[in-house]
Length: 410
Image (cartoon, rainbow, N blue to C red; front, top):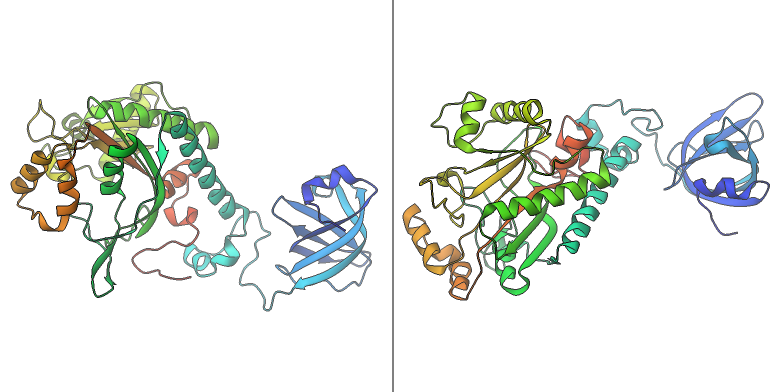
């Protein structure tokens, strides 16, 4: 008999059907025994005669029975006159129960037992939300004429100035895990004009915070023939509206409020000589945007050039500042983006000004001897986005198998 899903039971009242899934919970009472079966669609109640031995929670089973209406059962129906086949038994007692409304163990214990904790609705729903956000990201950019690309994750040099990299032995010579697809997505602007990528990036930075991971999923986009970074910001606004429209009821303003970096420091009450925003500054700016513009989002533009990578285009009207920006979402940096340099001679000058050698990035820089249009782009951290939407206290709560300063398993 072909298997159906738990959510299809109501279509088969009075019929004999087969379900398969996991034992979510079991109960053996004096007058009846029953279990709650969990499959990818939901839950179903299966009834057995009293004294029927039932396999432990998280065992995989197949059951065949007759669908009977019962208003107190999940979905208003249950299986009776049921026959059970054990497909795979749980070999030991699980360290915690996942049929409870919330997970009781502390986050480290959840991560240690990820194959179990990820089966809890709170964890798997967050991962599903991430998948839907990626789908919306793709669909929005497809509609704007972008082409999806796939770039190497093993590279010959660092792609983000000042950030640490994971080194590896690449057939006897040095290689690194890519910190971003930055170089490649810029080069592909010379092919398709508008490109995007969804993929892992790696940052060997010794952060041990609730917002950082050593490996995360980056949603990158790059577009050519722009006037400046504001064209990039307009595309990003549409992308965020597409994502939020799919996964939440959070409203993205038709025009997201924007502050120049110098003004942002003043509003946050920070030292005007600071080269970057602290987490406290970001929270203050998030509160300002909500109070003054009723917006969960705010752009911070014109970051100092000394805090941006060498490929960032300077602000032609304000020396020392860049055509780079961050998008803050609910008081935390979510997106980094900006306009890039697009002429070979400008790259050479930028490296010389910073005192950085050409050698490690020579193949990338020399590509700009070909013609490239003015272009720019952005990158969204997926896990950070989902943690802010769900209100998770730690980005690891919405990551399947997080990699951080201390964790490399499971």
